[in-house]
Length: 171
Image (cartoon, rainbow, N blue to C red):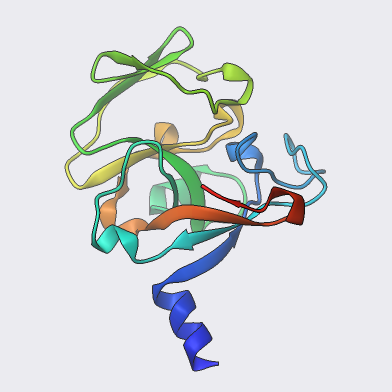
């Protein structure tokens, strides 16, 4: 039993996707608004890798929500799963239907309906912090509303989807 608890605390931990903010990449269960499936995806996050390597743009990351997110986002707080969009020092904005990072458009094939969401920015990500956004921009309460996430809040990247069985795979 102690080994299982140690693994969950320091190596790998499971998480459930409760909202539609990451649709269509990660599914949540209907009847929640925007959810497309009958059961929520369950993912595994690597809890130690960010001690050895820096987070990368495009990682799907599990992180502890900053206090500002708890104030503005509906539903339970505590831990979110979002895509890492901005690295420390990046300048981000959306114009038209495209995301720009440091003045260059970024291809985002994972977006729900191909839509980058409402225009925002420009915003510069502070040093030591990361900017997170959901793949379903119209249903995601993310860094656009509550700001960037300090590195110490990052738990780790999602590396595997383990439920439901027909969606099992590695990322």
